[in-house]
Image 1 (cartoon, helix red, strand yellow):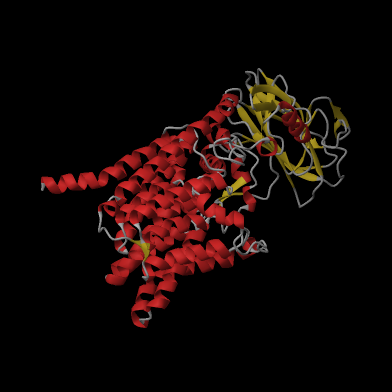
Image 2 (cartoon, one colour):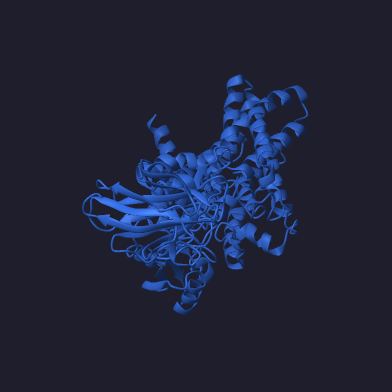
Length: 611
């Protein structure tokens, strides 16, 4: 028994060492790598804030519960509430990094391949899809191996329990990542066709009924969102072939990284001297993945980077298609060689992550000069998104780490990504973020900022990072935190049209001019018992304009409601008891579908005693 335990511990030691290196890569560095990953973290936090954050978020965003990306976001939601968005991302990455090699080893065992090659699952977890920031595809990798293993086991033990287990894997895979789900269904169907035993094949296919029905329903519901002409690059290009080898190291084709990857592969092939295995269950997944990688276009069904991401599946299925005999000492060292290559790859990844986080030190420094919960405009993608450690575009979305950690909205049009569960509603959206972040040299940064917000001023720099502020002119009594309206921008001390504030022929020197539909979040800047003022339809708008004015706090309690206000009517006065409230939401809604409503909030003051 002791000998058996010692042998088992020795066999598992490479997995333990690689798991520790993977955990260091995730938790030992402040920010993980991945082009899209910061935006996922930002949306994790937004979902959490739909119930606990600013009231207007519930009008700006909604949750799409029927999407292939739902699983990653659903798992991240409670983690974000408990630990924050960045920690939630790292928890998911940990599931990927530990689950992928274990499930890969399990699948290799089921199909009769070499289990020790499951170690390459650690590198697979940080492959092309990880550096793209395709978090849902990363999370789908262990599910993919689990599904394929369950499908194979179902063939040898075709009971209802096995069918149910395989079906559950299929449903989970659909709600995690549609492309991975589609590939697995294609592998399953091809295996059944090639087996030829119709009765047995039909029984094995029963598990696919629920996930297939769900996917067909999804296609019917989202048909208008997934239409679009594919790109013209239908067949393999030189860059795509380079990506097949450089993908584990770089999102963009790189000859130098391809050479390193190819060299490592040659070392493994020399040691193992393998030959192809002509078994359907071991070779077919690789052939289908390679075919998709070479033939599919890069853009299809309103989704980008289609073909290139299949390099990950080629890497995943290649070990199962190889067989080698252990007839001499050199070949018996294959497990040690695999461990050496994988551990070296993980060490290299950690070194690159250290360099990557040094590049982001300036970004973290900027966050110290920003008010938490403020909105951000990202100009890095326009100024200098290149990372010395991981290549082009890797820094393009990193300002989203700030909003993910500290709150606020960053300019991200999630509504056009039909897979994302957190969707924008079709309502006016804040278009004047308080902060703007740029990177590069000061001339390029200033030019990019001037094109977006000419009045913004530089408030801090930690080269090559720059922080600009475009604050709405404030008042001694309140500050504008966030606003959105259906036409133009919020105006200070004038109507939205640029004319003086005027309601029913009465002019006002102080106030906010907006356009219904609109909201304005105000932060009370001085102590007082009440917030007072008036509201009405500006004289410079349409004569038949009609709107409702409302003031709420973040609990949703209505503190003031005007009822229907017509153009030409005198301003409606209000006095709101603050009772410790620090922020208020001022809203205007048009009535009877009448647009072009120029609405004014005037004489806004904090009073020491209620009026």
